[in-house]
Amino acid sequence: MAKYVFVTGGVTSSLGKGIIAASLAKLLQARGFTTTIQKFDPYINVDPGTLNPYEHGECYVTEDGAETDLDLGHYERFLSTPTSQANNVTTGRIYQTVINKERAGEFLGKTVQVVPHITDEIKHRMLLLGQDGKFDIVITEIGGTVGDIESTPFIETVRQIQWELPEEDVMVVHLTLIPYLSAAKELKTKPTQHSVRMLSETGVHPDVIVCRTEHPLNDDIKRKIALFCNVKAGNVIESLDASTIYEVPLMMQKEQLDLIVLKKLNIQNFKEPDLTKWNIFLDKLKHPKSTVNIGLIGKYIELQDAYKSILESFIHAGAMNEVKVNVVNVHSENITDENVNEQLAGLHGLLVAPGFGARGIEGKIVAVKYARENNLPFFGICLGMQMAVIEFARNILHLKGAHSVEMDANTEHPVIDIMEDQKGITMKGGTMRLGSYPCTITKDTLAYKIYGSTNINERHRHRYEFNNTFLKLFQEKGMVTSGVNPELGLVEIIELPNHPFFIGVQYHPELKSTVEHPAPLFVHFIAAAKVQAAKKA
Ligand code: GLN
Image (cartoon, rainbow, N blue to C red; front, side):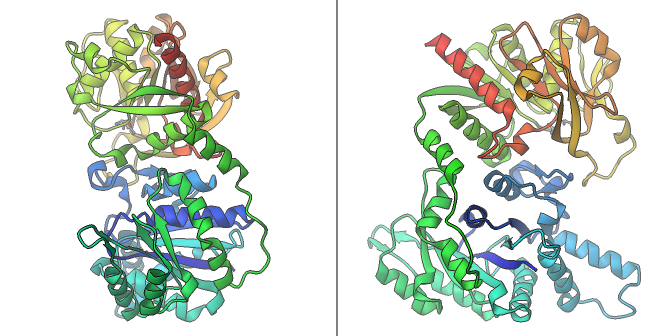
């Protein structure tokens, strides 16, 4: 059986529990342990798939097609190992399971209660990934902040697990904030004391306190926190603001978080951490040789979390190309035929983002036309690819009013249509084409040059697709459909060969980009933008 580390948060949200959990996992992985991370979220949605990006940022999709919290993206980017449906559990899913069991009569006439029925279901899922011998250490991030009403059953379950399992198999890492009062020129420990007290009142006692702080903590403060919070003196560590999240594993290594954890879990045999690849990446990231300006054309740009995986993929691909990727956010609603030259001036590449619904669509189409006509590197993802298809239909095939039936159900030229197996689906949660599907790539295409293979797998999240009744028309006028799904013939990749770099993909390559394996499409797109920048210089 695996050992379990729980990560809780106190004082405020947004302290970066996910990054701390991922950094700890990275260090343990680098020391030779198989590690996974899971997240328990307190909200009632069964999964974040039905949440608007403004509510909850990007919805991250796993290989097995789960719609999950964006923290799972960090876990994969740090560890380069896939997560699954089991790695993200919400209160909604717990209740759904328990209520379904109750309806099936599985509780044999008993009153169904939060304790033990809900907590038993939470416990089952918290321990699940550690039970088949696949992982040495399972790290569980508890969403929300200690004291929230809604995370109470999760915390209670951690208490039960701490009580049931041998002491050396479970530990709790608590992340808090040490605010700095500039008027008093002082770091304040009181909020941390309160949050640990609140946690302790529930019966859960932290073994380590990680303090987020803008200023280094001296030994006196650490000792004070340890004393008042009743943890070992060496187990209070600082987590200073970092210039990049990818530096946090090294900062945690410096603070010896991995060693503290291994000691508490009574693990004696471990090797020195091998972070060679990570360090090479970090070095390139910190020392770019030039800059490229990439326009991110989207409608959620006010909220950067909505495009988290895309932005991180740019960081991976930028390091690979030894350039700094300067992402210029352009709101698609603001782009018109009249102002496009001015809106997109100075860019070396355009990425038209994924999305849903009609808002900002025409601006995206104008942006695609601009990239196509001006030989500007273009990369369309999902909705972005669909917009490239519509632009080509309207301006090259002269199909007036060509559209996606998502935006115009009665269009005369439905070049993007609802997928056959999506017709008749009315339920919204978990019903899109989701997760990993194979794609066959034609040789002698840009896609083949990028992937170096004729068989790839990429992750999907959409309901609409290229309408193959128009396929011939597109091909005759020079659009190449370089990737298709082998079973269903769905077009997955489109490209324009008479352009320096013009590619659109129906899937989401950003979901598989990691520090150690940057997504090839992003790497080549940034390389094309680098050529463009050199031309302009
Ligand atoms: N709205 C489009 C569809 O459902 C694109 C989805 C996306 O960009 N993820 O097909």
